[in-house]
Image (cartoon, rainbow, N blue to C red; front, side, top):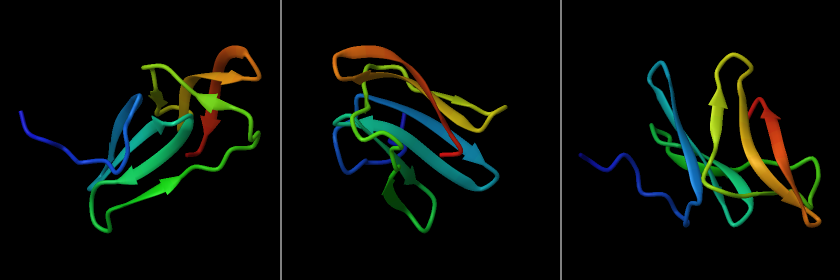
Length: 88
């Protein structure tokens, strides 16, 4: 086994995606979602939230290639659920 990438922060869940020559890791850290482009130009981008009080949580982050979306468990004001983030 080899390391794929060293991410700049601790990760609770992640998903790897490859589209052509572009490699991307989406991950949840500290309740926020991030996109990290592994191939050059490498770098991290925080994904914007439509609702500021939503936090991603748990070990499950799924990429849906049919809808180009991320599906993950969330927590908001003491409530838990599942959310789909379109076009990350």
